[in-house]
Image (cartoon, rainbow, N blue to C red; front, top):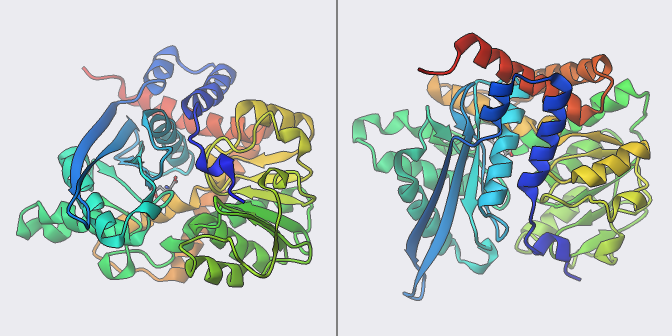
Length: 427
Ligand code: GLU
């Protein structure tokens, strides 16, 4: 059974991020000038470009890159390949990146983009040409000190390698290796960072463990469900099951699977890899209707797919104690109001999934310094940075007597406000 909420294009992500921003800006009494600046995106690049398909036919594609704000450093954020990519989604996702990098204490701003397409409809050779031609069309709008893309929904290390190679190939041969870090999330043989593949899921579980510690909650034997079994969903399930929690349901665009006795996380991943990245057909669980997913009896929900999944329509049915947002923007403001009233805790996306961009920062540093770092060190560094951000959010939530999302925004906005206060606005 196809899950329509994961295949149907979403609207209103920009509206969602702006509502979250307004709430925090009011609470903080944010400087009116800074408020105007942060409510605006710096640049919005839309490119239309042609690509030759395997059968010789020419198709045209539309790609986006929105650069929201670079007060703290180069724009940073992923590129997604998905039918829901449009200017509204790219704007919202770029804005979330600005808050995320600010909260994590990174020297980056926020950007996001991608191509509106369903990658499952194209061969690998077609995807390579689409990626390379998109990179060429973006030209000098990206760069290692200007705007640094990374993987996001349906993009991976291979796609980053093609972007890096295309970008470097259009520069002079002498500077070729100074340009590797135009993207992060590259494969290990192409300047990638050990551990970047698992960084987001690892970070999600670090935040869940910190939440459990603060709330005297024993994760052993607790049940969890995961929406999206891609990079974030799988690695979250992997690390969370290592802490003794049990995966009992998973959902992606192809199916919703349930097994009250537990789903073998690694077997499901092996199945999905062998089945075009889809969980449908896995024998270790049964299929249930997609609309039953969020209301399942479980302790923790990890939305790790697309935006606008937990809404006013389904928030009342949620039985879990905790939502850990592996995806960007999975909860609408209306959905969240209901959750908060019902005492459900939410670890907000800009904190919960920040392990990915923190890992990217270390990859960027590794490339700038021409070094090769070890995975254990990398995971330790991510753990440190995300724990500092978590503590800052926790303290802010107490100080301002507010929820975790609002507190995360307050930390992020204060840092940006401080920067503008110190530097002023040119000229
Ligand atoms: N796409 C990821 C995110 O939404 C990672 C971004 C990055 O590493 O730049 O945070």
